Length: 313
Image (cartoon, rainbow, N blue to C red; front, side, top):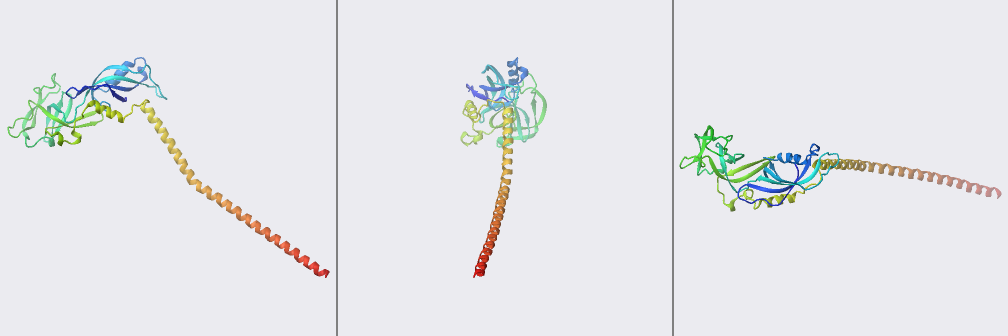
């Protein structure tokens, strides 16, 4: 996925939909060399209805495409062309602690399943449903809305009757209003390309909320903060990883060679020391032998001189 930096401003209008002006680092395949705009649009279309970490939301549309470079870069043995673009993205970015409305499409003792804007899924676990107000009635039936109809938000369209429903304890009326329920966003789970919303029917006071439930003060601030932790690359990720891998291999080989040399070093030192000691011992023995030989000759000479003097006398 191309890297990005967020620039410009995000719309702060009420609701989870924001427009984000951002920069993307594109890796264009060689088949689009003569038609780069078409290739860029194809890559941008691949982001639609997927969670994009760079903008912290689900991309719904893109517009105002601008090329920020007159030419791309081709690096190493990769045939891809790398360059920066600027684009405006329409993003669905729900905020923890905010209020949303969902159409009920599933009810069970464990949770209530919701459909947001006829497109996104949400869930309200039973632990986030106040038991002093609501109770699950397994003997009651409710209509399941038709999400494939021309008006997906209409709770009046139904395809089946399902058993079991959450109802008000005091009145035994169905939860919500005509199949639509208001809830508070308590958790946002981001996994792979999906964004899962967990809701709550408990009105938790702001000061009593967990840190994970507190809303972000500004979508732009959150995007800029995340950008500070990421530096936009100038090189292709694949090539960078390959170079790092080669460096690691070279470092490992050097470390292995150093270890072998370290092991062989003491052996060579001991061998050299032994040879020096043997040479010293041989030299000492030769010196002693020579000295002994010279001493014997000197003794014989003195003995002969003494004998000669004695003969003359």
